[in-house]
Amino acid sequence: MARGTPLVPLGYGKFVRADRVYALVPLEGEDRGDGRRTLVHVEGIEEPVIASRSESALAKDIALALGQQPPGGREVSRMGGQEPLF
Image (cartoon, rainbow, N blue to C red):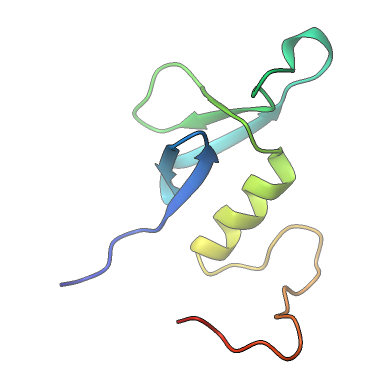
């Protein structure tokens, strides 16, 4: 069975396809709170999805899911002394 596009966790059991996300908008001020951190705009969904994760964490996961370098230009490395699970 072929593997499809990886899903990115938004928190609280919400997932979206990494290749369908086109914008991440951080919530600030009174809009933020109680599980509300980022608005995630997804192709095919009219209203943005509310994520409980920060935009930087989401951007990193989306980049890795799509096989790209995460934002910030730093390489993601494994912790020393640990074997990969997969």
